[in-house]
Structure formats: C-alpha cells, structure tokens
Length: 417
Image (cartoon, rainbow, N blue to C red):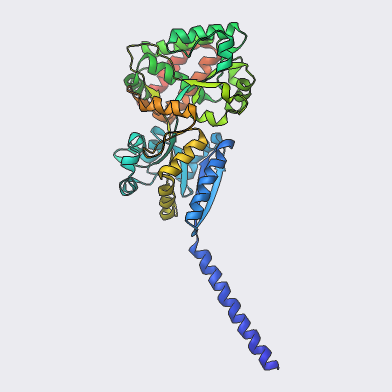
C-alpha cells in the first residue's frame, strides 16, 4: 500500500512538472509588444477598440498599451526614443517625424510601404511620412481645419450665411459682438491653437510657397509679409473679437464656453467634432477659413497622425504586424471616425459625419497646397520659440515689433541664415 502511494505521488509530481513546463512554453510563445500612445480622454476608447481587434486577430501577442496625456507625451517622447523605448509610439508626420528620423531614432519602414501597398493607399500623405527618400511612419487619421460655429447665435445676430471672404468674416464678428456674444473662442493657453491662426492668416495672405519658406527658416521674421500677417491678427485682438482671458483657457476648458453660448466661433481641427456635446450638435456648423486675398490660391492645414517604430525597439516583428493591422482601410477609417478625423487611406469610405465630410471635401479639392501645421512643419526649437512668441504677442499686441525682432534673432541663431 505504501509502495503504491509512493508511485502515485511520483506520477503526480511528474504530471505537475510537465504542466508547469507547458505553461512556461505558452507564456514564452506570447511575445510582449509595448505601445505608448498620446490620448485625450475622449480618444482612448477608440484606440482601445482597435487594439482589442488586433489582440483578437493576434492572440499570440501580449499587447501592453500605455495611454499618456498629450502635453506630457510631447515632453517625454524624445527621452524614450533615445534610451529605452516601447516597440511602437504614436506621433505626428512632417518635421516632427523628421526630427527623430534625422537623429537615427526611428526604424525605416520603406519596405513595409512597398510590401503592404501603402504607397497607393496612402499616396496623399506619403510625402509627410518621408524623410530623405525613406518612409518612417505609418499614417493614421488627419485633420482639416476650419471654423466651428453656432448656427443659432449667427441667426440671432442677423448673420445670413457662412462668411466666404475676410470682409464678411469681420462683419460677422462685429454683429456677434453687438449681440452680446464673444465672436471667437481660442484656447490660447495651448499655444498650438494660436499657431493655427498664424498658419491660416499666412496661407491666406502670402500663400503656401511663402509659408513653407518661412517654415524652413529662409525668410526673416522682420519681413514685411510676416508683419502683414500679424497686423491682420492684431486687428481682431484690438477689436476684442476673441474671448476675454483667452490665455487662461486650454482646449478642455474652452468647450463649455461654446456649449453655454458665450462664444460663437472657434478655429479648430475636425477632431473637435467628436468632442461636441449632443445638446448643441444640431446647432453646430463648420466652414472653411475665408478668403483674404482672392489672388492667393487657397491652401489648408492637414496634419497627419502616425505610428512609428523606434530604432531601439525590442520587438520589431510584432510592431510591424500591429502597423500593418492599423493601416487596413476599415481599421484606419474606424480610428478616424472615432477621433472625428479623416481617414488617410484612399480605400476608406467617405466619412458620414457632416463636419468631417466638409473637411474631407475641402482637403480633397485643395489646389493651393496642404501644410502639416506650424509646429510640424519646422524645426522643433524654432517652433517652440515661435509659439511662445505668439502668446507674448497675444498678451500685448503693441509689442509686435519687439516680438518679431526676438524671433528673427532666434531664426538666425538656429538656421544661421
């Protein structure tokens, strides 16, 4: 009897060892894929839905996603890429991507573009994903920029139709102010919201070619054409067409002002459509930034969000699987829809959302050029100084000459031109 029990115990021990070994092998087979994404609160659910679909299609991958607030993300990403990065990061196309590609911190994805047919599906955003002839980014959604506005407040102020020209826009501002409503909301605490204003005033006054020369550091900030942009901007500020204390509001804090009808318009990307509460959505419209000079071809901002694989990533094989999954037309379209953006995949269906549809048609029919955005089109250091200068100007427009002189000194130091 004792001998039987000993044999039984030995058998059970052997089984336990085999089970443990099997579990160990299964765990080893599940490779860990780490991903960091920049996300505002309303965007997280859309990200997570796509990641859940990837996990279902790839059960052998142990996916670990970290969500990080947008402002903190911008500060931290450089440190990750240079030291111990995750396997995939979200980021922006254009100069922001090129900044890290130039430093050898990103994986070359040119072979993925060729193998997966991205050159055809993402032709419109290939240039923004390219640095020195190589592709380093997998495109996601992109934004059109224009004015969100309250139709009911326009009607109350006696404004008939959406402004198509600068004179019509100024007239609308005058009528809104007279009706007791701030014409324009701007979240100036987020300096990039001011950068959108500079982009559009420059694109409408001086055109795309000049704008890109300025972004490349080839034009002095004391140039008369730059001063003309700030003069147009100063007129709006001097007439008090923007909300009071705009420098104290970030984008999250500005939404209630529009909801409560204290301001009527806001220049913003189509992603804002996903943030609009259901209570005011029927009263919310969207129109293109008006013409200032009819002789200047209409150009637009169309910034592209992307995924990157860091050069020092540990699991590049599964990282490439994730990127290929995210670049599928339906997945790309679902992400864009959830964020209130436009899919950058040419095989995706046109968006259903009325605002996104206007943005889609605007970019699709733009002949004057599509810029990435102020801080995505130029060297990071110059962009940071430029946006800080915009806040200084906004705080005291009378100091515009001094602000531009400081910017010019910065340009000469950075670009040595």
